[in-house]
Image (cartoon, rainbow, N blue to C red; front, side):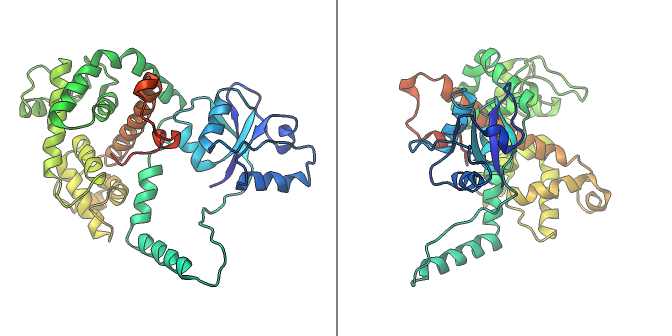
Length: 352
């Protein structure tokens, strides 16, 4: 990650450290960001900033968004996560070269905690847990650009209210979070009940004729039937996923199977296993799904060619829409209905 200077879009973009002089800057007290500013003081003695003690990185980014301060400094991973929710924050420039994230420990005579930490990181690196955590929290954060996010937020206000009750009603029946169903519906049709594609799929959940028959949908353009049918088909796919596969990997694979077909998903899992990776982990399977478009690989599996990158994008988009929808719903809720959670938890990636 890198330390980045963040400003508000629409304002003059600072391009170098000199441009920060005389501006209102806030950083976290005792942070690496403040340490970097202290280092820069030697060359830029007029540089100034404040360090409020009662805020987190997300709060400072929000203050830039709200035009309460000119700039803040944040780690690039924090900026990537939060810019989905804060539509007007922009990166001005990198303040540092890429740096490694690390755990710091005090040097003491008793090294047992340090040894345990070394063992812990060695284990999760070897068994793939570390890669899973990285994919889980950052694997989809850059999926939506500014225009896509802005359009989605507008559609939440204008289009979703017409179908929210149907998504909630279906959620009660099939046991899938209504906001997840809504995110899937948006990825499929942008909540357009009359959506059609050249391949023949139709409706909010873009069902094929065969799928519609399978889930007893007689009118694919009827919003209620489409949403209910799509949710039922998700459950059909989910039941085919091996029971040993745990959440959230299980649901991400269900979504991939919904998009590309269960057979192609299984082919990708076979290729994943052949390559020495874990076929039960989405982080590994998503790396191998794109191979289904290459003859070298699809010729060795049962169901043949597939545009394997599409289900990867499909799942990542839905995850991004889901989290943005949750955040927007939280902002729109009356104060009495908002859960008492730390702000960071309200926007952090969810394990489902």
